[in-house]
Length: 558
Image (tube, rainbow, N blue to C red; front, side, top):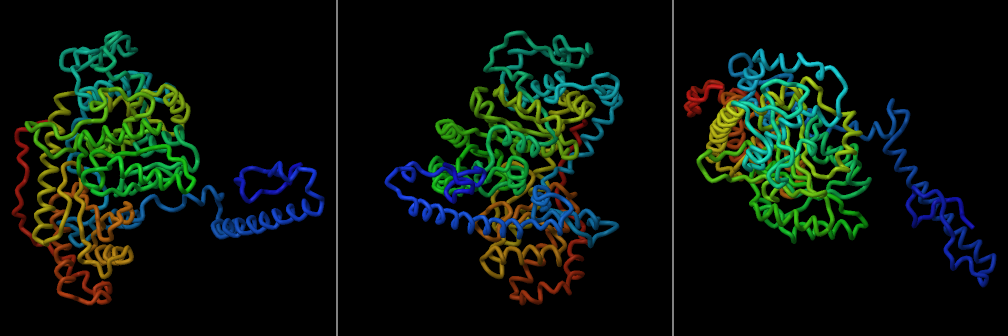
């Protein structure tokens, strides 16, 4: 017989609970059976009442015009998002609004947007995007095939870095696809049976509306509700939102003995075992290399060992390399970064998935163009169905595929970007050194990870929040707080130095320097937070005649 109530030791999704076999034995008399049944009913009633109370607390229909599911995503993806919007409404401008707000919380490279815009405004680029009927018609939701060919060429040249003669041929200074419906001279040509180790197949590539969208869809496809995603901490603040909102997975920080060196087998195993002791299933390892927010590049052995560990546990590994082409080293130095595609000799198999997008390296977050490279055919079939909700518009695919295979432009663009990065990074870190504020030396990325812990009113995350509030309300500067990045040490902040011009960055650093000086003079925190001295702080740096060294870009004509 079945009792039609939820058994307290069975998941609530199961509608009935079956009486255990030992309760069906003939030696159990009726009164005993009734007592046991009443006992279980009582526990189930209390449990349901408690759950109903929790649900009522979390979702009260009278307060919302959306469902409980809709209400669960009302909260912003980032704790500092409202502060960032404030910076957009009242931005600092050295000439017209020198006392405005300054966003140092967003990892976008505005320093290269003009160069990209100039390239995209060529007449031929616009013609490529809108002159062919494929821009206007239905196509595979994974992406236009010739655009996937172009991206395959780009990934092979920039990430796999194998001999391009293995599987594809250059046609003049651009490329051409074999059997392409667009029989122009600016596409890629593929051999029929290249060596798989040396070649990235277009069939293994899919596009999505940004890397965060691809992470969400990827997790929806390879994990189930409640599954744990291990992420070395500190990590990109928006990962929590990407992991939880649609896929309903649980992001789990992996705390490490040395975050700068990256996760060890022991670090990963400890995090996995802790989750499993809680009854959770660990399903995915999510790695970011170069790391956000630390700005460090994991050594090849660290990446290989992490993937090997995951494979032995039959876990999927997602490798986000969205900052891969924003490396600070000069081009004549030994390559400091190696893609997971190259490290694994292009043998990703069914359990390793590569992600990249235009948002960071090309300063084009607004394009919403993310790329996944995976050799898992079933996963690609799944994405082909899911991607109808988050695909990239065909004209955008045409534009992007046209410039990604322009090797001359891309080479010069990335070198110009590198020089801009180093110039702003040096401006930022030199001022931090003057302030005697520790930071993690960055090897890549658009940010520096700074330790303001010595300035907190108390060594707690409440103290970190007070410091962040002071910086925002008085200095009108917004940075990414460490708590949102799952750092276990209060006072760590990610400072993004490429979202603003060097002139505005200099003003921001002067304001921070003034705040630091006032805190160290033992000014009362209550007085500091009053904001009565905002004008005093925001005037810092506005009259500077900059002595910084600007990057020499005279030889880089795009």
